[in-house]
Image (cartoon, rainbow, N blue to C red; front, side, top):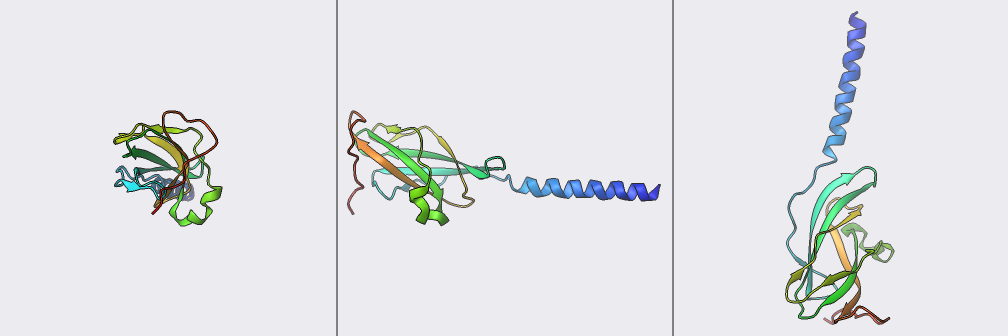
Length: 145
């Protein structure tokens, strides 16, 4: 009888320890970062919020919001990657949908992406176009320093 009780308690403790190990990986940051300027365009800023780690995706949920301080409407895509992997930015997945921002401080809706980044996120904007329409093959180059 004592042997069965010991085995039961051992199994129970292993289950408790295992569940506590997975609980710690789902911590999330509930605050937004400060607005940061993009590397390419001086008039576009972004902020990020780190979410929970998703085991099924093997990546962390990140929320991103953009702000346009230019006077003109702007269209663009973005890439997000871990700050430790900036050298691999060319191979990072680009957003599927175009972001459209009116001028004069307009903010985008909150966008969600999943990235293998646990501490800091690097955000780069691509395929930039200013103006009334988002057509043509030519995209805006980055601002000159």
